[in-house]
Length: 514
Image (cartoon, rainbow, N blue to C red; front, side):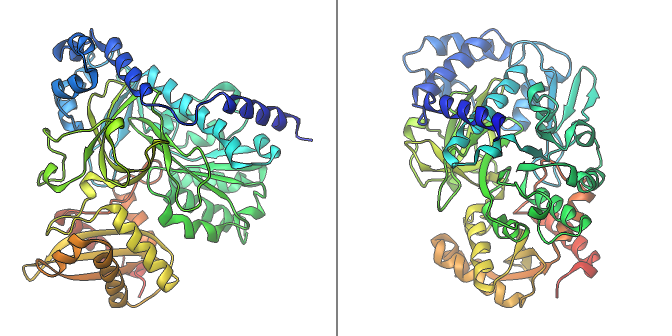
């Protein structure tokens, strides 16, 4: 009998019985009050009059009225650069020990996001909530004795003056509790390897020594790791070497486009669970099984205060940034099935910060959301108003219609003979006529999106598709020095970046699927 597993499962069941599944809106008010009180004597707090906000009759409305929306460029230029220059008490008391490097998608310069002790505690608390929520998934007792593979960026952080720098997954893994280290794989030594290919090779060579019950990481890179383990050990599927693999915890991007790929690598069904960990904090986690989607519950009482900008074209500027005067709504005011740009204020000193993601609520009572895309990946050059969520749905339609597996894709509005078309690149090992695929995507989007249909009758004159080997996408990421870790291929590219991408794809012609 798995004695340890029984004890852990019992403890989780007991804790879960005393954990409110539906955190109320008061948790957010309490979180905002704590944030303001803690930071009222910082430079930022004095500048924006946190004490006055705390004394107001409506703290949430006063907060939104007095403090402008910040993207990374604004908060760094106005405030966070002082932290890197050695100043204390800038946007949060004291100075952080860590800076999370985040560039989001390829082609961007690295951002440096402060990570405080309070934020690390917030991330750990959310992770514990994820573990306790496992009682809802009817897992066998033995599962709680198995090892957990966490594949992110390297835990070998770089020293930059008085700060340690790395991606948030590496920072989090380097701060895991001592009691968890016995479960954690691939372990400290392999996790500290900087080169992603070398790290994955070491995992493949050591895979037979581990009894993995759960895996966590960004889908595209986890998929490549699983393929490497299967190839190196001459397997038919991953369950031949990890027979007790039961759970995969996704994160960073919507999982659904990858589900079909993952199913092919498995020897038996696996429970897929979604999470929302970003460089700025642990935002949300899936706390219960769901049949048709993987909605996540916002972590409303865990050091992050949320606001929401209705994601409408009139609130976006020409570069895809949310305008500084865009209106926000609180958790009380959101509506289901409406896209919002997410705004956060956190225990790391981010204030009314536009994280760059768009979400929608699938269940307001449970505070459950799904990620629908990125603000800058909203394709609206000629009024098509395409979100990543709509693009993902079109790709899934093509997969089902033509029995394809599409690992990656990117799209751009580009000009041909002076007129705009949408040009799609699909990463797949399967073959199909490009014109047929273009028509299938086009027709699906016309039926699913009224604005797209209008655009196709006017300024958007055509749709083209090129299918390439998925390795072209991974090689592109590598040229940007972004292989593995938190890296995600941009779903939408601007014209200049897309021109560079097309030249690169042509140079990899031997990888192109014909």
